[in-house]
Length: 384
Ligand SMILES: Cc1ncc(COP(=O)(O)O)c(C=O)c1O
Image (tube, rainbow, N blue to C red; front, side):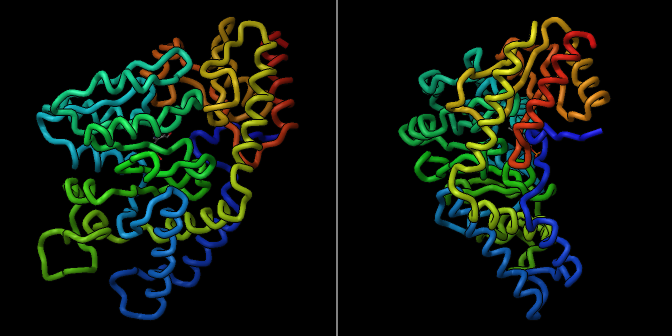
């Protein structure tokens, strides 16, 4: 049976060409520890890590490569910031479309005296920036926002919210997980103080590598939660104050960084916007086909503007879990069913607690796969 992967929102497959070769070459030739080994081979890898920081700067419209910090994933980046930057007595604003990578650390911090408001988004996942401004209090320290919903793909207005944050002197932290690489995000134009990313989704790199790009203010005012060896200032028993060492304790994930570097090279080799156009063509073709199925309700925005290539469907006449199961067992189509680690987003979209079947398209998918999946759904919905 053919296997079709429509779960790119979870992690991308296939990875960018060159990623596995780069990781393999590093491991085969020696993944020598940087900042520690005083030999040529380690310096060469150091150079590639530095290049990766610079490539991330140019991808995200940022200029300080030393303020690019590597972490194991965006979940870690968001935790480092939410827990290291916010203090008891602070207030934070977020949205009702956030992933648990934002909500769970916020709820943990609430128990330590950090208050938050989750601004309600509309039924299609869009956010009115004016509602964010209305929530600002004298003690509002930060706004934390996803750039795109992982449930339905709807973009949140980061440029507009960034302007509001700048006007009020509030730090702006953005979760770029579902947008980075495929759609442009310009950190400085959008007034973003901390841009968190994960390597294994739309950036098309391996798992286990993510990071954050920090303004000087964020870098200075965030307490490093993880302390340890950095290979620098080793006479100190405190973390160095300089970047990126301040936030990079412990042996670095060099295979992850080198794999990510290969993925970034691939993105650089592509026509700007080409991957997005291809994925959106597939998503819209799929969405139109779904509308013809009895009882199937795709959630989120109906048009192709302002969204990523994620289509979540509530099969009203059926059990979503059964549909996903039959798609996989009978037709080899891999999707994700349920709440997608974003219960509030489903409440916002009107699909809580049943959730949806999420179809998330990637650079490797084809129109033929979309048509095959629609045909499979027609049969499943008709009970054949
Ligand atoms: C919007 C969003 N934020 C954060 C995450 C967490 O990503 P990771 O598991 O790579 O840390 C995800 C993953 O699904 C996501 O979709």
